[in-house]
Length: 243
Image 1 (cartoon, rainbow, N blue to C red):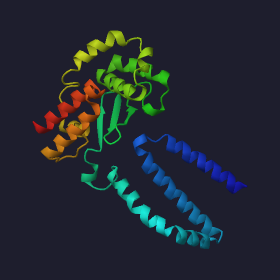
Image 2: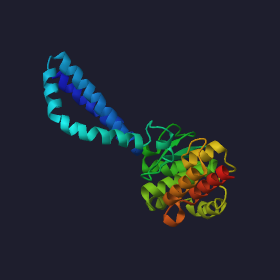
Image 3: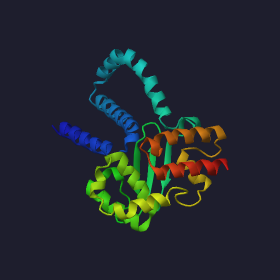
Image 4: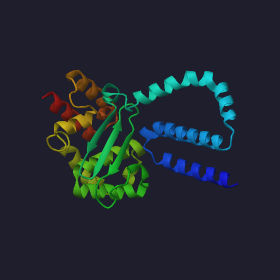
């Protein structure tokens, strides 16, 4: 009975931890949990003297594992693990304002964000309630226009247009904000910031910069339902690195 209770507690803890992971990190997180669970089962069998059960199961599953493991490992390296610079190039883009830091996964188009300062500092956007987003948006509009635009882009991707019904201040802010962000959005970019935006590493070639820019624009171009703000920053990043 104590063992069953321990398994239940650990399972709930693992589920909560997995649920709090960003969408782009859930596959690696599942692999980590599977590895930890496997080690735990191995230790338990060794302590209870039942390792022969494990050996029998491995003998039965060996043909299946031999086929699945290479593809799992290849997928892990290709999704932005530690498989070298080429595997990581262009995998994610990072754009930051004073209040928000946003990450865009190139493969899935999923955006995730973290609050850097203010009353909600340290929280992730994925953990906020819908009612909290409007308060955060109003705070950003009063303190950092770039962060406000980043948050609007995130809300559009996550909720579509439904959040705008609760945004009572949008009429006074939206049109002026769009005009202000038709060009360079947040001042001149440093080389490091430009690399982060395009998801590149230092020393990227001209061809890699152009490919990353093209890939990003396919995700966020306004003509495809994307964001004027992010499109401006991506164009600026390309100009900074090629200039």
